[in-house]
Image 1 (cartoon, rainbow, N blue to C red):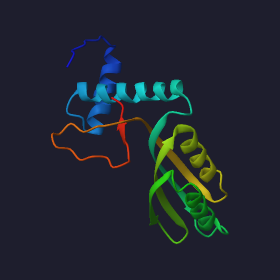
Image 2 (cartoon, helix red, strand yellow; image 1 turned 90 degrees about the vertical axis):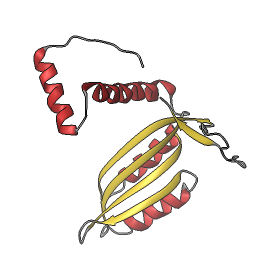
Image 3 (cartoon, one colour; image 1 turned 135 degrees about the vertical axis):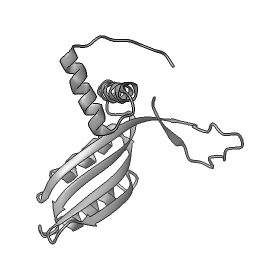
Length: 157
């Protein structure tokens, strides 16, 4: 691990300490590493373009009383069955449902799918969390299994 030092204004340091305390970090270093990872990931996604591979969590809240909305969402998921790895559905109240989809594919296809669901009439809130990955072999343990025709997607450092 490499050590770096930095100087910041007292008010910024105080605000940072409040942030890391509120989030439960054990140290400034761990909080700073997470902030750096987030910024590096955002830059990587903007530079690599639409063909880069990713995994994503897409969550949205919708009104299940809106005519045929649940059926349209379900049809969209089936139409993109190679993109949608898994979904979870939660009933929030008498009108609203929360759904979370785990997605895997190119960044362009993942974003397009999320945008299409978010644009549906009756979808109230939507958030996409996209993580860049690369095709590879992440086995670090001796005697790891063989792939038998599938690839692993490895999160980038």
